[in-house]
Length: 238
Image (cartoon, rainbow, N blue to C red; front, side, top):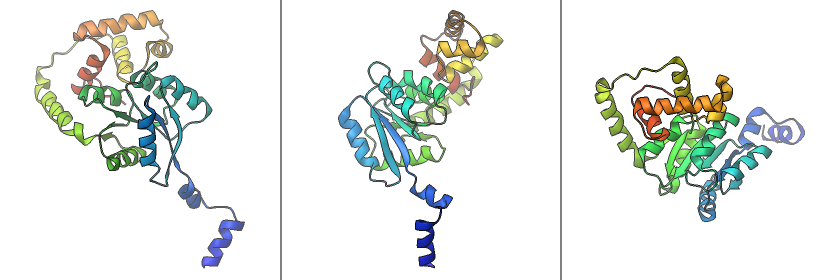
């Protein structure tokens, strides 16, 4: 039996199972600190099934890499020069929706968690989490699940419970059908330019609707708006 298997591997076509076992899960690292990228890479390479296929120091470099080839996952820092993680996240969801996104950051802040997950990220890991937790996060996102750093879990859970208890006090905000459409796209992380294309409107009109949403919800910026509507189930992201 062993000889027959060996002959099939060398002389016959490889089975789907054999190919799936041999295929690596390909990852790109996007962080502006080279030492951090090297540290992450050394941890990831401990797993034979994972492959770091590229590195980028900012969002522009990342998008250039993706023009050549696409990975299965991007591990993405938030604070990068030129095009930061939050800015590039919306572009990634538009251009490469099939790529899994794991945020890796120093921001131990639930607002960043809400915003990035709402915009299409699949996981949120802290840079001071353990090596084991990094590999756990990759596997979790690889399996199609949402990952959250243990350091944020209690804070987010408490906020969700508080929001649920106080939901009865949330006053409904009257929105037009168009404002509802724009709000849904804002939560998903789309840029004004992309919204204009999808809704067949001018970017100026989109900006007008976005300004109206901030005014009606009494929010100072888009991040606060997204956090508020998601936490209060006004908009549930896809």
